[in-house]
Structures are given as C-alpha cells and as structure tokens.
Image 1 (tube, each protein chain N blue to C red):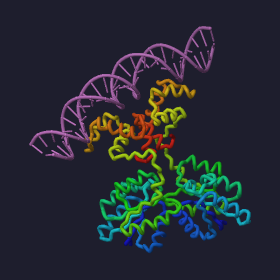
Image 2 (image 1 turned 180 degrees about the vertical axis):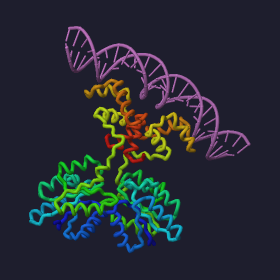
Image 3 (image 1 turned 90 degrees about the vertical axis):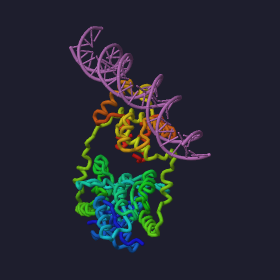
Length: 221
Length: 221
DNA sequence: TCTTTTTTTATGGGAAACCGTAATTAGATA
DNA sequence: TATCTAATTACGGTTTCCCATAAAAAAAGA
C-alpha cells in the first residue's frame, strides 16, 4: 500500500498534475521537492523520523540555477536515495526516451517503474503506481518499441568507461594507468584495444570517433 | 480581456496544470488539443462560428505517433494559426531554451509571449497571460541570460564537414580525396590538420574524439 | 594438486596521426 | 608581367594507434 509519496520534479506545472493525479488515487500524504538535494534531505529525515516515504516519483533532468546542488540530477538522486532507504519504491517520470538510458535505470538502479512524459502520461502514471503498490515492476511495452534497435550492441559499463575517457581526450595509452588508479580491471592496454575492436566489429565501425558519435546518439555517454 | 483559450499541448500532465492555472485566473472557456492539426481545426472552426479564441497556448515539440499530422510542430501551428486568425494572441510554453529559436518566434512569427518550462513556470504563465491580456508582449528577462556561451566556438561549414567525416569513420588521410571529389577546397591533408588543430586549440581539446563528442552535444552533427 | 581453458597482459612491427618546417600555389597590387 | 603576401600543400621525424602473436596469470575442471 502506498500512502506517503515524495515528488522530485522541478517543473511547477508538472508537479501540480502529479499532485492531482495522486489525489485521484486517494494518496494525500504528498511532499514536493524542486531540487534533488532537497529531495534527498526529505528522504533522509523521513527515515530518521521512522516515517519514511513509500514512493519517490522523480524526473531525471533538473534545470540548474543559482542554488548549487550536490546531486546533479535524477539518476544521482536515485542512487543516493537507495543508499538511505533501500526499500524505497522509485518511479521515474521523464521525457527521456532512449532505450539504453531507461534500461540502465532498471538494471543498475533497480527502479520500480518508468513513465514517459507523453500524451497519455497521467493514465500511465496511475497504472504504474497501482502496479508498484502491488510490488510489481512497471515497464510499459511501448517503450520497448520506441527504439527499434537495429545496431543493438549492448555496451557494458567497461565499454562506456573507455569510450567516455576517449571522448574526454585521454590518450589510449594513458587509459591503463587511469583504470588501475580507479581499481578497474582489466586494465591492460591490450584489453582496452580488444574491447574497442569488439565494439567496432559488432557495429561495423572502423574508428573510435564513430563509437563516440554513436554513444552520444544513444545517450550512453 | 482574455476569456476563451485553446491549449495545444500533447502532454496530458502539462495540459492539466495549464487548465488549472487558467481557472485560477478566472478563465473557464478552455479547449484542449493534443495534436497540432486538431488545434488548427478548432481555431478555424471557431473563427467560422465567429466565436474565435482570444489566446493560443502552445508547446513547440509534439511527439509523433500513429496519427499522421500535416503540421509537424508548434512552429508550423503558429504560422498556420496566424493565417487563419491574425489577431490571435499566442503564448508559447516550451522546454526550448536556445536563444536563437526563441528570438525567431518573436521576430518572425510575432508571438506575444514565451514561457520556459521550468521551476516557476506556473507563476510565469500567469504573469505572461496578464501581460498579454493588456496587449503587451511578455519577454522574460531570464531567458536572455540562459545561454552564456562559454565555449562558443563558431564552427564553419568546412569544420563541420571534416568532423562529420571523422564521425562517420573516414580516415583522416582519405579526407583530401573525398573533398576533391566534392569540389571542396582547401582539400590538402595539411589544411585539414591545421583546421582540426585550430578547433582543438580554441576549445582546449587534444583529441578528435572530443570534437566529435562536443559537436554531438551541440547538435552540430 | 595438476591440467586445461580462458582471460589478461606484454611485445614488436607497421599504419595512421601529429607537428614543425619548407616548398608551392593562388591572389592581390603596382 | 613582376612582386609581394597569404594560403595551401608537401615532406620528414616522432608519437600514438593498430594488430597479430606470444607470454603470463587467473579461473575452471578433474
């Protein structure tokens, strides 16, 4: 049963609809946060007071303004919230439509549901919340159809690390040292080369620049 | 005085808040459109019936789905609406934050107001509607401050061509031949290297991968 | 424990990219 | 046309990347 909900969403306009939607589901114990840091603070305080939230509904992207934030966005908020309260249900409500990004949320951050901001989003929200209340995950089918993955190569975290470093300007030959410093293995130069070759092979690419461009398109980096 | 308003917005969640906001301004004659074509149809019908709208509040980007549309988005809707009813007031409510795009709306399409979907958007909406009701334009100052371009390097067409080719996997050494085939000059390998170095220098980069990533972020390629 | 298999790392030769400099070409001017 | 200037191209040395192969280490199996 879901009775106490925290909404983390910077758009006032969306925030209002979320509140209304929850009320239509007879959920009245609602807190709002317009900043990620504030959201985390409320979660922490609620846990301390032993009045923790049942559900967090959060956006992914938050506009930056004068208020400097420790948490840069919804993804970081989710990770931090999971630390504080592992059993917190999390529903992401976002414009993000890229398959990889959404899958990462489910697989790495173990979210309970995702609703795309779109035409029927309010209806989807209600369905999602009802599913989550029954301790079931909500994964809308239409999201699967969004990205008909033709070149579906599934990047590992290691892959993304390498490509990110390249995209940041690190020389290939300097990557092994960096990986060792961060305790990532394998870290040998040959392993990096091998991985890069496998990725390029799978995608029919020949150059690292293509990998960077492709990952940017996917939103993987 | 604004009494009759059409909302063109595909997100149900936003639509609801807009309705609520209008009601708080004592505007109750509200119509909704979830598609651009439908919005234009309603405007046209209202004009014919001599019960035209006072104000159109519209988003810019509309998600495509099965319903094929003639109008591809808010900008086209605005242009078409102006044809049908030149005196219609138009308020754009969008996530678009690029200065050039917003200015184009004011200058070319002569919109009456623009409100960015953001933290205080509901408050801004009310201000905007009040201003427009007094036949004044609403141009929020903070939009001017949005794009403090720090790394504003202005890419030439030649720059973009080179980076695009790299991002497509062409070897640097093969680019001269390609440029010659397409009648682009300069085409010498040294000229390409020089250009790449200038770009990297200006942006503080060291590798081509960074250029590709940066241009992807900008949407330049 | 000892093999077998797999993964990771090391090495060296060749290709591409990088970088400074020199030669060439194109354009402008008198 | 001759001269000057600026832009483009060519060239050579060095670094980095690429790729095949071998060595070493780790994991799995008997």
